[in-house]
Length: 388
Image (cartoon, rainbow, N blue to C red):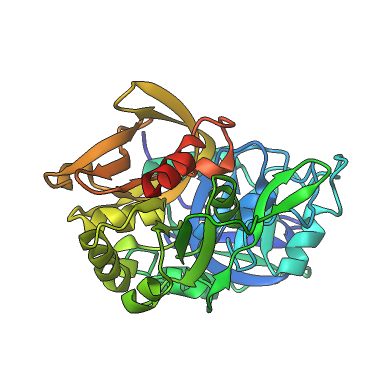
């Protein structure tokens, strides 16, 4: 099936936003959120809710998210559902105009929140056609732009999209990581009560390397029985060991794992050599695999959504998972002693490993995101029990 031809259509009346792909494809729409322009990789997410969480997930740094669900904004936004304080996606693309909120937890409109966050939105695009284009040709580089007057320099925007180097080879973890050490205090959220607090009784101490972490991961580590200290992505080995960890957690994050691995992999290798219990998620999974001698690859379109089936190989159990990644561990490169524990039922790609003779394991998906809703919580318990 042929790839759709680049758009040559002139700007329609009333258009205030535009998406310009690096191959010359131009799509017009109605802008919302912040005015301006931003460059990034266009991806698509198949979730039917959770748009606030998606837009604040640091793993989406450098990306423009296409929501395949047509109605975005119906639950509004609130102060509790942000995944992190740092920037995530630079913009988003939706089919219909942002919906009025209709939810008892809503504290405001999604479009106003986007403006306050400095993120650009475009509505009115055929998101099905754009998603099909990504599936056929891969995730493209693009510029998203919004101007209330509808004035755009298309050649300049096209040049900006074409000059952007793309995510391959890009280390974004050090940009979205915390800049200093933090003693984590929060626990999981409960309706009507908000987020709990971390108990101060004696507990296993987990040092979490922040490559662009979602805060809810740390809350689940606390709920599983840990005391958590979060450190920046580039923290040296001696600093981590100086904190006297009982285990080390490797967080999710954006960008190319091979680029982040330049400074992270030597630290993880040294921790493995010392027999440190290690648990990794998403980019942390890829970091552990690289440290164990495997390789990572750029995916054609990536996995992004809240309904991805993953098979747990040992038991034959299927978990419904939440995913957000454009790179993957190359299963064919797994060395002897590294066991594939999970596999995607969409495309057979690797979704989990465990290192024989070590207390070290990782998964590609997000167990804290509750898509199952509790299919994957056992991983946090497994990690804490491996420490004990």
